[in-house]
Image (cartoon, helix red, strand yellow):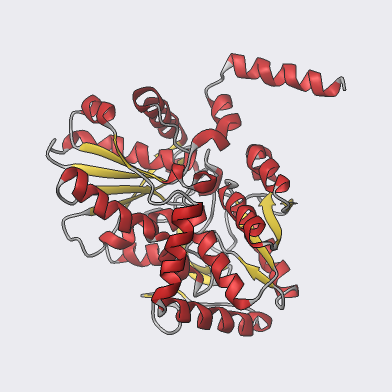
Length: 410
């Protein structure tokens, strides 16, 4: 990142004047932390004692045998506290909040995992917490909403626009503008105005640092390929960052193909004719937008990938051809999830299942001496309503109907 917050042609900090001083303060505190080894040690200690790090690297022997190609390893961010990689960034920002003396945090969330992590951090550090969540996502991620509220957070459904992640981000910024003195916006992904893309990537880089050590220990050499799903890009940057200088390791990001690129109902921002460079929500990147710069509606079976933009760092890596980007449709994702559950007894989140789908297409073409890593960014229990509906599970449908009758009779 250069001094103006750009990564090549992407990034920046397009912010209103009222937030200028706040961003200056955040940048200075972040820079101090980056230069202070004691801060990283404090962070590592917090994550190891509160958040189950390091997370395991699991050899998926059954899937490896099934495809007959490279050995498949899964980086288990689903076993991180709150069930996803989101805690890595949130707990790091929580330590920053303590240093800055703020008393309140706000956040946006799509899949609910970032909201869950933020509510958890706020409870631990004794902070007031407000979470903005698109009304559509509130409905499809109800379990996470329940736990956020039980931990003391206020969850505000956003009814504007497509009622998904981009609209939640807009509302969070509106809140921040009017509450700059005591509030910190815990941005959830590697997007937004500088220094958020770099800062979030720094905290998430713990994923790749661990994975590099683990794959050498278990496999004896670096992996041939690494796969990660891409919404905003925090889990992808988390595992990619350590391997960017490893020339023999190919990095593959898998975006949300929705109903297919030709349907117009997807969330593909890179290698997509529906996307173009633009400036929105405080930064420049590739957005799904029309000729007038109006943001298009997106679709994904995974709430956390249902977003119009992508990390400016990933846009830069895409432009420089350092990361290859693919996509997976909703149907491919459900098939990959089903296979992973039945072969390994592991339940990836719908977001993570995009990475599995991308890997499953290619792993059989590699040598058994090779290895690949799939970053399982989260666990799928949060998606039980969406998954059960997608599988048209009759027993689940009956359970919901019966439970509804039980509640309505009380």
